[in-house]
Length: 194
Image 1 (tube, helix red, strand yellow):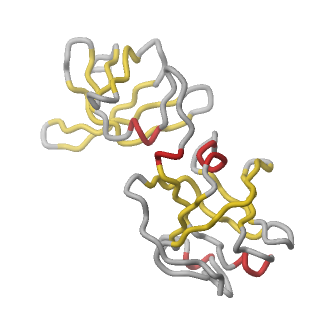
Image 2 (tube, rainbow, N blue to C red):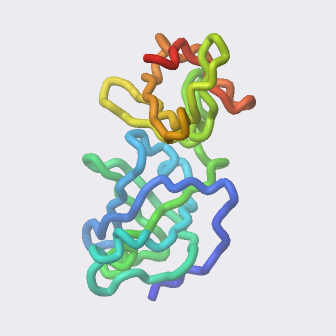
Image 3 (cartoon, rainbow, N blue to C red):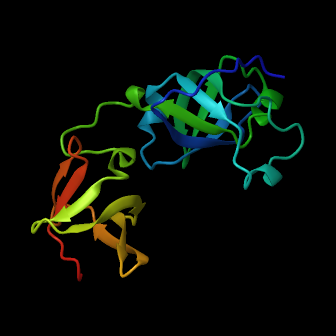
């Protein structure tokens, strides 16, 4: 059993990745980041872990999960490796210990994310914002974002005639006039019938 202390999950915690498996024999482990730009994993040396969701449990294998609830993992080093991130923690001394973390969900406090540059936004900050067009017509609320390669797409949820529907708008300057985080809205050049 790893010497991990139970802790409270910070109020502003955001899930940023999942531990895939052990990497090497010295306690390193592979992480699948939830973002193509995993700066939040690199900027924080304190990762909060929670057990995997139920869908992941059958894949976990023998010797699974060295903790319950939320625990704090002190990260010694994290770096990019191919399409994943590899990391090492003070309390994970060897491969067996790293394997026992397989499937764990990684959370980082939003307050420890690097500051976004002008006209850059973290996806987590956009989810839940209302989207209005230039005529102040409410087009929906941001439900999620999709990366389509060359651009990101806002996926909006809205209701029409009692039905729950989705609308997609490219998140590019040609269509997005302003992101107003304080007002919790995005203004776009988009019509409801597009």
